[in-house]
Length: 313
Length: 173
Image (cartoon, rainbow over all chains, first blue to last red; front, side, top):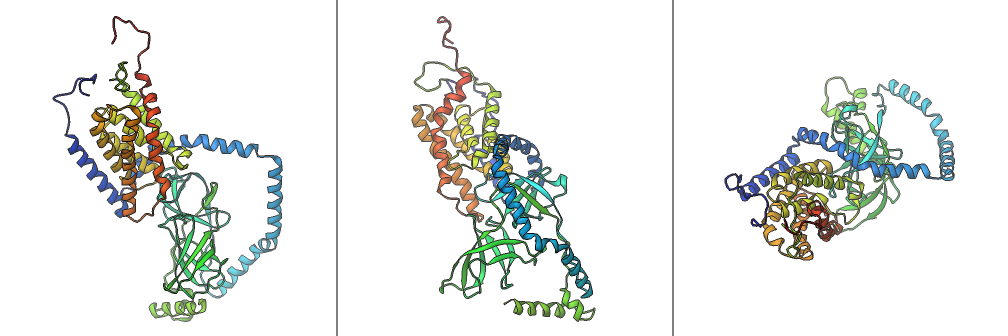
């Protein structure tokens, strides 16, 4: 090939040997890989690269979103009307509960104040548009259009109109990355609404969720709704997460394999609500404050927890 | 250099800006929403492989590494994952280039297939090693389609280097 090449071979200026270069780059990328994965300390590098890549990605997404927009626009009057009717119907269905919600909240607050219980946290947040799904086939993430610019920080939960969608894991200047609850590394502390039993739900990469560490004889039924338990300091209590769809009880294992399907439209495009971070959890449980005297924390803190657990089971 | 070793038409020298433009265009193709369709090739790997084979003095491992970083950030993958694979791809393509160009195009495509597969397999192994789950067999369809695209890609990317057919017979070059 040297004979065919147009540029004369640079005899005296060749740079390092290819093998040396290869070793250098491989070591560099392995080092970056390990540091990014284990120490998470390369966020600044990632954010600065994202500043360059993000506009290009948005440009690349425009044809697709234009097609979506056109389809939405051309979607006939009829379907819109039908949807409108359905929504009105749903609103009416929910009205008995919703109309009294304000009064209930007020009453709840008053009762809680009477009991000297800490007030329920109210949920606030900001709506973000899902821009695109990350291309990585090994994880389930979406990118939304709000970032550091809008005050998003890593760790905030994201919900849609039906339930929990995921959690913000990385924040870029003008966008942020939400890891969906169906991602393999994502865990959500949940509670079975029927029995009050607490557990943790993990993502399976196939779009389902698995409720792990439940004993084989646990009281779980197909159709049970799992809601966030609020025990972490991330998700507020009571947001629907998943519905149990399949239970495999095998006496050979000590745990039942319980599979659920996310309630929220986790894999759909649309808008999500990014909830503000929760206030830090108070260290002692509220019941301890009522019963115990001021000083001792630990024994008072342990007792009510146990009680609640027996009640739950 | 000729388009294929059988061709008697000598190509013009490549313009550097065209190389960079094609790489940026490949990045754009990777960012399109179509990237989620099953069997979509990794365009950046494909174009990088092409230029590493054709012009290994201009496009080398440095470019591969930078493109890899860009892809990592765009994908939301672990940093260094694409860089590692692309650097290896660029090195292997440059090492094979002297041999590869002496084959007809369809046999070139056959020889490019292992290179593209290698890029994907390395990325998969890196992620599996740190706890990801197997992404499914359609993950490997991309490289196969990519190697089939080698034939049209050669014609498209060499297009600016062709000379006009009508030329002065006294001055063949």
